[in-house]
Amino acid sequence: MSWAGDFPRLTPRNHRVTSPATAAYNCIAWAAEDVDHWWQPGAYWLPADWPEDDFGLTALEQAFRALGYESCGTDADLESGFAKVALYGSGLFYTHAARQLPNGKWTSKLGRGEDIEHDAPDNVAGGIYGAVVGVMKRPVP
Amino acid sequence: MSATATPRGGKYDVKERFRQLAAQWKEQSRHMSNPAQMAMLKPYQQIIGMGEAAVPLILAELQQDPDQWFWALEAITQENPVPPEVVGKVRPMAEAWVAWGKRQGYVAA
Image 1 (cartoon, rainbow over the protein chains, first blue to last red):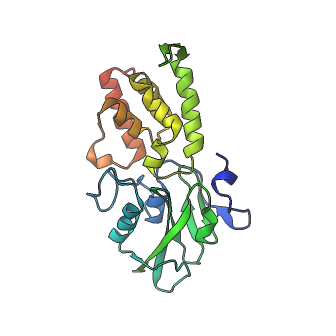
Image 2 (cartoon, rainbow over the protein chains, first blue to last red):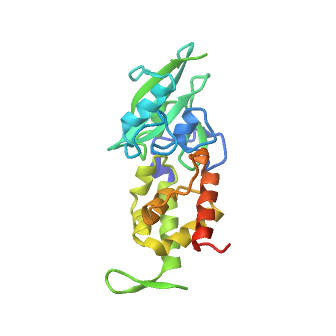
Image 3 (spheres, rainbow over the protein chains, first blue to last red):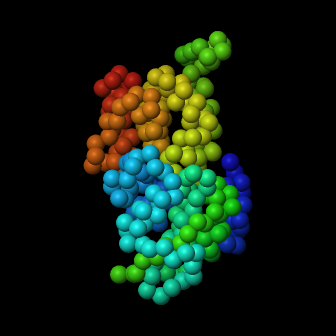
């Protein structure tokens, strides 16, 4: 599948590639600020005892809850004193997580591909990642 | 080149078939992070369907380019030689599988 087919809303103006491609970590790890693991239920996940065959949205929500995040609905605005992540899903599966940067932009690891900075969570939705299903936040230490 | 029978009685070259399916899967899954979603893709399912014949080819692929072949290897072999301390670390996981393949005779020692 082509870049355009996977991400129909990405344009040259709304994103920038910020790293080379690597299969060492995935988007969930990147959103959790971990570049050493490929996060997946049944292997490397939080909580550690999460069922190995549950790859749904609840798995993703619980992983970020374990990291101290709480739901803030769909509020993706920059909020002083808080870090935010956006969660994505399609059909039965969670598909992606993006993390907000201190400048208000968002950063995503695209599977085994590159990291990108993008203007808004919706920029990587509408294709292979389906829809943004929620935003979570936690206080910045 | 090795050949094997298809369910419909024809013959195909296992290495070439694997190469084609692996390339299709890599392209289709390039931007995916959910291993269940990646494993559901048809080329990946077809590789699992190749059974034991695919194991040495997957291990050779892992040696060259560590990637999410662990689901397929577990499904085919019903083994998991990855030690707990490296779970989630793709390259060490690949190395654990290749070492297992050497012990089992799938990979030249």
